[in-house]
Image 1 (cartoon, rainbow, N blue to C red):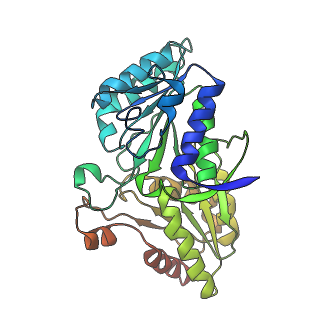
Image 2: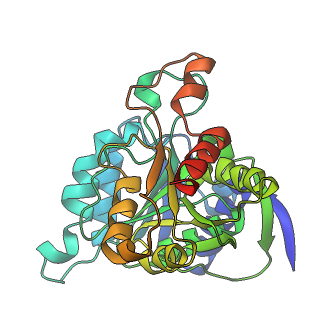
Length: 326
């Protein structure tokens, strides 16, 4: 059985179920308790679990990220919510130099089972300080897993898996999708970290994307179908580990690929995906891999500028036609 619920509700169900199952799991972050979360993801959790397990923090990302890392090293399982990943840049030292390296630096004596989660990518009409693309500029060192998904059912199952994972996981959401609804199964279930999903089968071109860029990607696939072009759509869901096998097998079938990534083009996920394709499926390509990225500039307020900055269905369709007619 499944019911249709919003992404924020799916995330809350995941955290609530895991906190009921395991009393070492707790939530901390800015406004997660008294205010029910900046985006109401933690609504009602303070009432159920109390202030010792749903903890409001000061506006100090580096500080409370460090508290979470220390708690994880001492046997607890923190969920650290950032009001936005744009501000989590301040916590990179704890995430990259401590959480991600705990296991290797301690020669396996300490693990760091922690989840860092919150909205990523630019919202509408925000200043550049809060409008970084979803993964742009993010270091992803060994020891760190990164999840970035759109579908509410996936979000719940992946977050539950992330909370149970012995390694640190960065869980990238989108504030523009917290109200996005989808069918979510009732009862206990998990979604495997590191496994992409084929959202739409196709034969002529492979479209690869993740997070909220899945929406214009699916829209583009429908537009292409009306023109007789069959697009296979892959939702990465997990950035690290990257499901290379699913992507490569699709490209071997379609012989063409467009990667859609909300991040800036330089040193981004789309570049990594394109590299993996040329490394493992070069002989199957009938055209170069094309990337549809955010513009290589800082994003500003104006709505027309945002429209020009971000990938959209029309840009994806143009890219597909470019690889189709090579």
